[in-house]
Every structure is written in C-alpha cells, then in structure tokens.
Image (cartoon, rainbow, N blue to C red; front, side, top):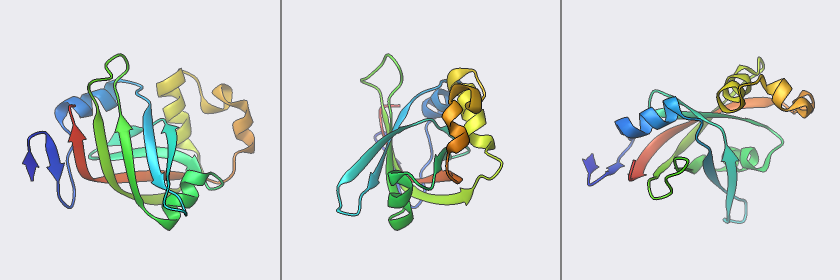
Length: 144
C-alpha cells in the first residue's frame, strides 16, 4: 500500500528518486539495530541497492552483527549529501549470508573511495569473518 509518501506493508518499494540516489551516489547511511538492553545502536555504513533490498557488509565480531543475529529488525536512514531536508527511512528485516570471497566490501570501497578495500583499509587483512547483510524493507518513509 502506498500513501502520502509512505509505503507500508509486508514489503515496500523504493521510490525512483531513492533508487537513483542509491545507484548513482556514494551516500553514507546510518543503520540502527536493537541492542541486548533494548537501546538503539547506530552505525554508519556503505551500502548498495539490489532490486528493492539494501545490501551492506560487516564482520561477525561487530556489535551490529551481534544485534541483528538476535533481532533481525533494523532501520536505515539515508540522507543525500548536501540536502539534509530530504531523507529516506527504511525499516525492515535482515538476512545474513557468508562472504568468504569478500567481493562486496571491495565493490563498495570502489564506489565510496575509488580504491580496492585492502588498499583503502590495510587493517582489513585482520578482519574477522565477513558477511553480507540484506535489508528487506517493510516500510519506506520520508521525502525521497
């Protein structure tokens, strides 16, 4: 169901403007997960769009990973660079898959920095097990 700029239901779709922003811009996003004590935990992430899902990379030793394993509900806030009055809030649930080949962080690093991930972040050689996180939206709100 779509109404007044909101999409609510079992799955939600991205607006054309949001798709264009995600596809054409290295826009930083803020991921909110739910901590063990119920408090929100916020993390800035690199991401990309795959159809109507958001995709990002993390490691299994990070707090956000521990939070999403326990509770798969997340919110992602996307604000275009230079336009803080336009935003998209994507609420959804996540699925996690292994990323043994580490292709996603490399692809995202090229998008965001123009460099391979190992070159941008030499310490990544010591990263723990890496996973791909897919956010399937249940609601998309905002002005994008």
